[in-house]
Image (cartoon, rainbow, N blue to C red; front, side, top):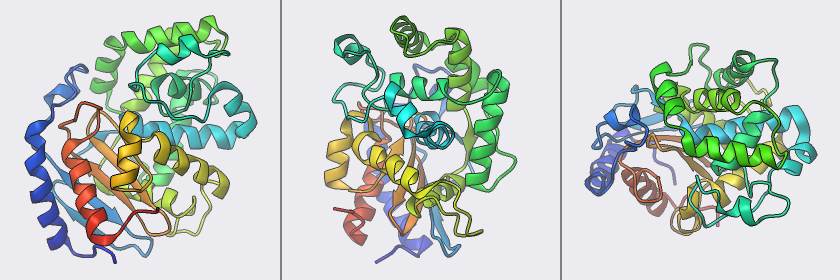
Length: 309
């Protein structure tokens, strides 16, 4: 079964929105703290071009940690799995996404996976280019192709706000540099990473990116294999095991689809061989996931048996 009705989707949004009052926007990044916690929107994009949606789907949202999946796909394409996974691991963690604890106890001190901040910083470090601007443009070009929108850019206000408040990420970078996992200037890497996280798009575009992952890297509109099938599979596996921070296990049991969240309240879902999902609900639970967005996915998964397990 599939949800092909805007009316039905609006009903689910109304139901899920009741949970928003139990969440909190990510005000530790000042620019994100301005979001309306009661907002909730969703778009579902099918490979035949059909799209169903509900809420303010044209509202732009910054990708934040959703960008980790996309940068991982790009770096795997550029550098290959052997080089990437020499520097970052493949294991889930029960620790918060910005924790430094496991780095201190692991030998060698490489991050457990690319979805926690330490691992994502290592992946961003590997984006090719001669300077921050060239590397950002390389990532933007890839994202524009996935979303089929050449106008996608980053939100400078959010990027500046994150850069000024990124002390924990700086600490992670200095630790990684001390252990020779990265070898570039820390401020340069933080500049690129905060700009990466501040790339913005709407729910429709986010759903389209999710659809390409769902279709094993193929763009159904053009037939082009944008991401090699094996690499798309690796990215989806990380979405299942690590994509919802340290709530990934519970999410897999209750909802059971590859998904990646961000602290802006975005969630990108990729239902294998079926469709992509883009959600925006800025009120977050204690793990950093959209509280109404997760409820919305629970309702959809229960109704249409979306789980891959």
